[in-house]
Amino acid sequence: MQQVTVGPKYQIVIPKQLRKQVKGINPGAKVNVYSSGDTIIINTSGKDWVKKNYGALKKYWKNIDPIKEIEKMREEWDDKPETASK
Image (tube, rainbow, N blue to C red):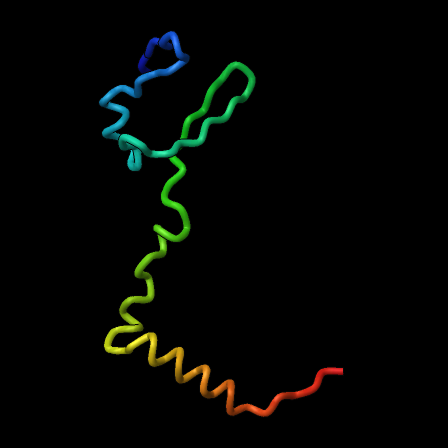
């Protein structure tokens, strides 16, 4: 455990040793803060879903033009007869 001082604006500095141990703590990073009685818990929020999953399907789309694929799908939809729902 390390002790830090709360500044006049209620800010604290996370000690360097702890910053090195915890991934995701960089300038501008978002963290979650919770309280439980007289205890304050701080944890990293991680990347948002879009950033975390960006490029996840890249290998499956290799050598495929997504614009042409979408146009092909639209043409297939246009060719299908409309079904009336009752």
